Image 1 (cartoon, chains in turn cyan, blue):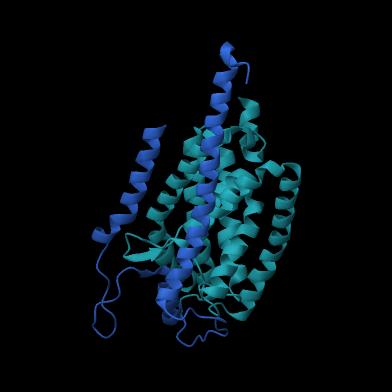
Image 2 (image 1 turned 90 degrees about the vertical axis):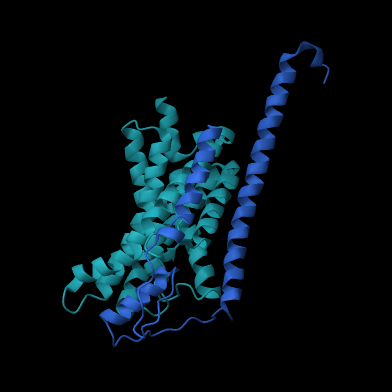
Length: 225
Length: 116
């Protein structure tokens, strides 16, 4: 999902950076507030951040014959809410942009928007909806993490199609082209991310049940049960 | 629960490994040479931009490029190792805490152990 350095026109690069900036501020505030109220959750936040560090470093082969990587931000979005993943995504993207020439500073806003804003929002929203419908926890976690991952790559396709419409077919043709590169490649990876997130949540519910009870998205379930 | 966890791990390994055999061979490039298999989707998008907007020039270059693909894989490995280390630390702490709690619970219920 990394749009390469310099590969967005100046207006788009600026626009996405401005759009992402308030989320960074809100995300930092959200993390600070949650850690102030529940300092014992520092370990879990570390686990959520570490999970996205691992998954976003793993470039996996896919059915299209190319490689891509999962995002790993779904887990943190379920535990701490979507905003808390914005600072985590920022750290990952800055590390890769500055040291690896993977992504870039000019495309940081756009990449942050797809990875750390749209993905976690979709994941947390789906998780909440699924729990409200009374679906089993594992089903909700899987759907939220895998579809959140896919949403990130769809967003990247939309961003590129908007910046580079097809000369003949316009926005839609470009979207199909970028979607074919990103979204189709991502399907098996998104499934993997969903399964791995279920694995971690299984361990969390077994070993960290007390801490989970104080987390916003999990707490409602505890109140209902 | 344990069985479910192992099934999840096996499924992830299969999902990651099977494409190596079942993915279509790469399309030949403009020079007729077979294309590179399992390249990055990010680079493919970069090529697609080149096709859609042939005149587009990137207006900013990365400040530091990894000196080689070996250095790049070193940095990616460091990123993954750091994350895996944190997760391993948590899992070790969590399993040990769980075991100690259970032992404490057993001791509390056995009357002859009340001395400690």
